Length: 374
Image 1 (spheres, rainbow, N blue to C red):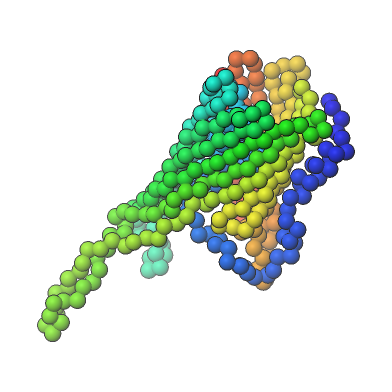
Image 2 (cartoon, rainbow, N blue to C red):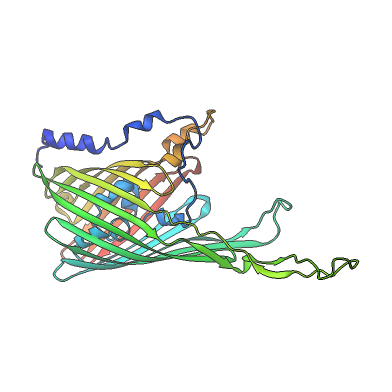
């Protein structure tokens, strides 16, 4: 195993210190600026794609090199060495579930790659409550949200790759539905620093059109004045109409991520990574994570990986004027960890990954992923 240079340690320290210095000086107002918290739609676009990326937080964009790159960094899809497929399921809060699947194929001698992905989130038969009927109206509703995307990526040199994803977003909320179009753009720069690999990534995700809704639930009867208001008990003359809804922006995110291998050898690797991100519905956030991986355990074809991260999102940590019993849960929000088992031969790669992500007052969530390469 190679030695860790002092310069490498300095780089690692810098990676884990990407947090803006002013974060410690937040005020006590719930929203002291004009940040549009909670104004975007289709938030399921931010749920992730794989357990590995979930365990490493937003910082995963710099080290993505598997099928989940389709989601985390389109540029890194060009680094995939063999065709493969991946399926994931996310045990989310309130007994809801999110699923993601992707497949990618390198071609042109490995200099280019093409991939497809799909993600779905939803739930069925939820009771409808109103102010007048707090125990329920007897009616139920369902939610079904889906996005599907196609990615093309290319290696422009032995150090630089870029990729573009085009995707459609579909949102069915009860009796209304909406659709939107978006693109993701990503780059991956990879080089050596003090004889250790270093990677830099820039990603823009969910840049697209507004999500506008239509459907039967927006159909109403608008009252209309009678032709002769002097007549006693004039007949009601409702006019059929359709409510118009405002378009909601997608959750667009810009990320800059950096990763550095502190230790690297033929059988083991220790990587630290950091990330700075800015969303259109939040103030700037950051993430830091680490991954330790070993392969050829005991001379076999098996490998193992351990991962952990912390992601800070200002919208989840807005201070209030009075402390509550929920402060501890809020401070822990953003913690994630997990691991994976791998089996690799010259003809096939198999992998199983798990991630635990804590969502503060919403509780813990679990992410499971199966992958195969051939």
